[in-house]
Length: 65
Image 1 (cartoon, rainbow, N blue to C red):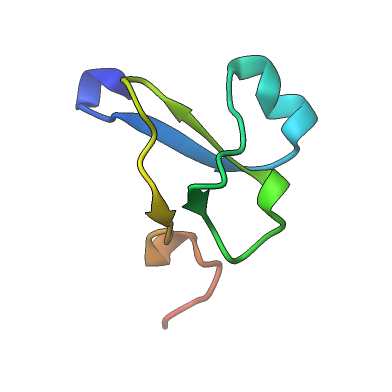
Image 2: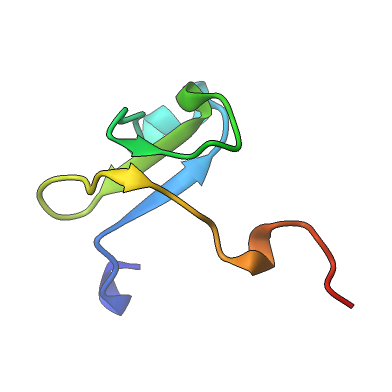
């Protein structure tokens, strides 16, 4: 992902699993669709952005056809 210019990643998953890869919950970065402790981020460079995160429509699980 870094090679593609990404500054970090977010995941929605089990904190005990993803923490081993460096992911952690940051209260400044929010996702209203799940309990806060399950929404985690990994910053590649410097500080983590702040605000509400919205996933792309393709990840919503809803069909549009």
